[in-house]
Image (cartoon, rainbow, N blue to C red; front, side, top):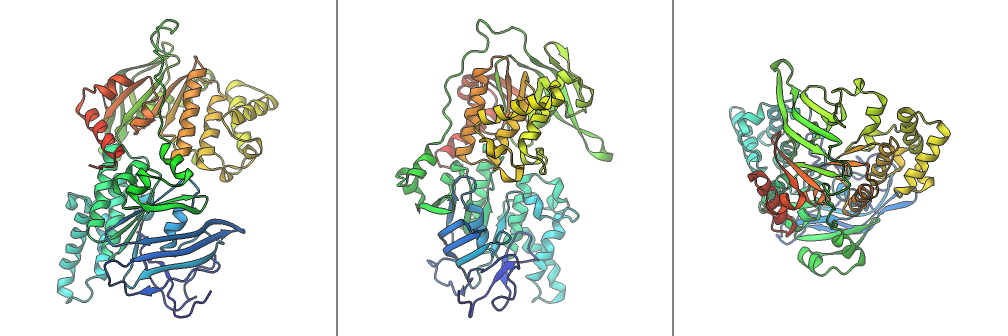
Amino acid sequence: MNHENCEYYTTDPAGTSGSVRPTGPAGSAGPDSVVGLPDVLARSGDAAEEAVAEVRDLRVEIDGRAIVDGVNLRALPGKVTALVGASGSGKTTTGLALLGEYPPGAHVTGDVRLAADGLVGYIPQHPAAVLNPARRISALLTDIARARVRHLPLGQRRAAAREHVLSALAEAQLPDAEALLRRYPHQLSGGQQQRVVLAQALLLGARVIVADEPTTGQDALTKSRIVDQFAAVAAHGIAVVLLSHDLDVVRALADDVIVMRAGRVVESGPAQRVWLAPQHEWTRELLSERPEFAEPESTTGTGRPARPVLRIRDLTARHSDGAQGTTTVVRAAGLDLHPGECLAVVGRSGSGKTTLARCLAGLHRDQDGEVLFDGTPLPRSLRDRDRAQLAAVQYVFQDARAAFDEHRPVVHQVARTAIRLRGTDSDTAGREALATLTSLGLPEELVHRRPGQLSGGELQRAALARALLARPRVLICDEITSGLDTITRRGILDTLTALVRDRDDLSLVLITHDLETAALAHRIAVLDAGELVEQGSVRQILTEPSHPFTVSLIRTTARLATGTGT
């Protein structure tokens, strides 16, 4: 590849949002771990119709295997271009190419072209990871703003920098800026952290914003605000490149769509055309993968034991605020789970869903009230529960990767559950683990690998298998489909519905922010700001909600599903 008269772009150390800047002659700043960086050519980009960033024939290889192959992308001012596809399709690799960032050891060919002033801002899936936890938000933003006012007389710089900060916060749709500037990153919600990173990129004058899965794990109301947030950014003439598996958000926001599979673009075009008349078989499959679950059987008919397997009475849970005392985060006067029943607990991010689930599992000690299992109070702490109680209530975490030891084969870790909680010998436990893993769709050769060699969806199936090996009566699944692509998500949900259908002795608590996922349940309980505000059958909650929060959640979900945003 000819590198004459080229400029490389790398991550700007002054901008934790990942903006890029020119670094001088070709070869002077390319990471040592990347072989054959593509040309990144600066050009004028004065014409409004001209792309501010463009990817041409990008190919990224690792160990001789192409993870991105022949991808083309044009980011236009004021437009939202969405990259969609299953996990591992190459979306993030393509998006990061706009910043000159590639996996270690990658061999890269093709061109990434930026306008002369085409700074690129990056909004990561986990924004807290790029915010210095030891500095207040005011310091994080003011440091960047000072660089924009150096041309002013010394006496004017402070006020001008503050004006830039407040303007960026307003553009990023962060209200109550004065209070927010005094806080540290950990004192903000995930959505607020995301908007602070966006404000950093805007302060740097980014012409392109790459947003990587910005709605992962968010409820419908928060998703709607995120749609508004990026629509406002595009309205200011900034190009937005959206990397997402959330088709509702893409439908509401995107002007153009690029569909990827196994590193290749299988279809691209105006969003409306792709949604209404998809040409490629894979696109049609992706768009058809909406969960449509059969009407569940009654949980109160003949043959069901009258006594709940799990019962909550007057539960109050608190979080410590350090020296300031405690804050009540959950109040639930009464909630029952019957044998063979699936109960979905829904609510916004931060509504107390996970805290409630952790109380059931003995993972949250600071609580009052009772959690009864078969009529007997369960100890509040996991440490105080006997082996039978530990086996009876099993918890599957949202982050399956963090729940596995990265150094041991998956099948060995799954088998350990049967040994520890049921006293099974190692040979029998190994056979049971293998049988359970394969029954959940994991090939035998795969489960003998370490966790790092499995995808997120595969690890979630392994986490389910590990919990099932305890032979639980209650299985708690905490947002286990959050962050998974549409196809993988459907597979996990199909597995859960089959488990509840085939095992009358198993009850399921499904923690979710997503009403489509909750629709597979027999009953739904709704949390709002820590309060249990409503519960009832799926049909009752989804068609005749009584609480204003539930009504708002359902309406917003419907608007996103039809692509109308807010």
